[in-house]
Image 1: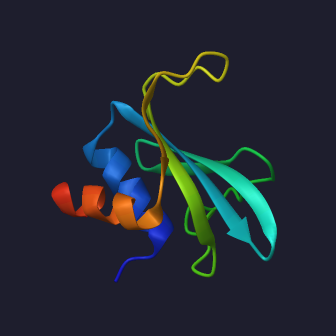
Image 2: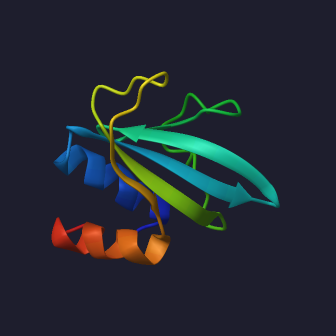
Length: 98
């Protein structure tokens, strides 16, 4: 089974018109991660230069996921769907074969 972060990156590769904004809990701290066209970047902490270092580690807990239309404008995001649970997102991932 692929880790959560990799699956979400694969989803955005198949759906390049979408940006995922993922709220996660890592070691009791919240983080927001933007995922677009197969790449992840933390919006709250530094992101490793090495793409093999996961931005969303395996032990992270997904709080919610927002699907946003690309291009992403933080001042005026165009939401497709907001506050998706991980369970609901798994259904969406299965629909696109990820």
